[in-house]
Image (tube, rainbow, N blue to C red; front, side):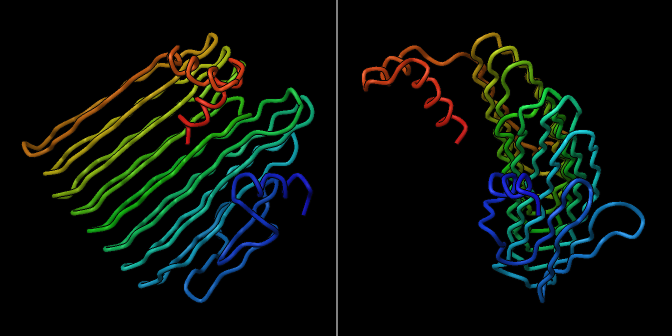
Length: 305
């Protein structure tokens, strides 16, 4: 395993030399290590790059890690991973990725993940993205996540882009069944001339379904972010989206929420706030002896927590 791969694994998947549970490690477009467990089965796809991951009915307390690493420029990695989660499950999935280049060549990872979650199951999905290296080549990450929830199930998605990514297009789509919940927390940092686009689209098709989308972002320097969310209430349901952004320097943010109530009992709400760091926050921290730049870093760190 390359040292760059190890560095990425530590950042995006809290790797400490090994994983507890099933795992698959991807490096520069190829699988370099894989292990299944008794109840979590990982098999390579036969028709395209990627994996079929099956979790048996009733599996609880298990974890699965599928990090992807691009270690140098001139790599354009595309992978398709499908997750088939049985009924009555409770599992955690870690799927971070990092791209690294030390020259002028671009590095890119595009992970297309589909989740098919059966009834009465709970999935926690943790996804961290980072760009590394001193090269001037573009570092791109373009994740696509499609989620289909059966009845009385929950998917909690914690996704973050923690720096260094030149450009990204983050697409998340969901279909929520009867009595099920989709919870998405996004944290996003851009700086210099980086750009990021976030697109959420969720259909609540089952009675008493719910969705909670929360996006927090910081746009620094000359960077730009675009956020677009669509929540469709097609049955008796509750939907909430919240987009909060901080801009510093000459950063810019565009937020476009859309709520479609297609049922008389659909209850949908959106909240949005975009602005600079409040002066009183900086002043308070400076009274504790922090310089202005240090105070700003602490405020941003707390905001993106």
